[in-house]
Amino acid sequence: MCARYHGKTGLCYIATNGTAAAASVVLSEWELNMARDFVEVTSFTDSNKTYVSGLPDISGRLSGFWDDTSDTLFDASGSADAVRMYLYPSSLVLTKYWCGTANLDFTINTPVGGPVAVSANFRGGGAWSQF
Image 1 (cartoon, rainbow, N blue to C red):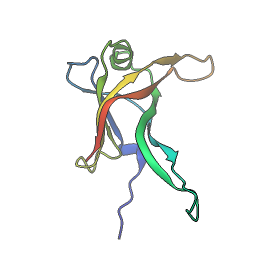
Image 2: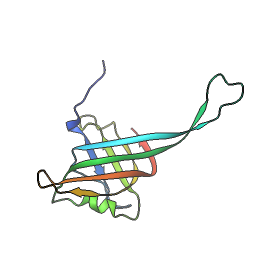
Image 3: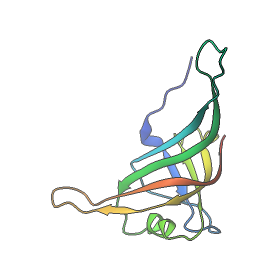
C-alpha cells in the first residue's frame, strides 16, 4: 500500500545568500520542475524516432503570504550567489526531499481585495539531489 500526504505539511528552507544557513520560509505552495532537454538521434534504419536525454533544467515557483517578520525570500532574491534550497513534500517524512542551489527572483502583490502575497521563481544554480 502506498502512503498519501496532504500538501498542508509541506516545508521550504532557503538560505539568504551563498554562505548563510537555510531558514524556514512561510509559504502556501511550492513547485519543482525537473524538465530535461531531449536531443533527437534518429538514424536511417531506426524503426521510430530515437532520443537521448540532456541536462535537467531545474526551475520552480514558491508562493505564500507576506510575513513582516521575515525577509528571507527578498534577501535570497538579492543574493549575488546561488542560495541553498530544501523542498519537503511533507514534514511528516523528513527523510524525503529535494535540495540544491538556485537563483531566485521575488514578487510581492498587494491587492485591495485580498491578502498581501509573495512569490518567487527559481532556476537551478548548481546540482540538485533527491533524498
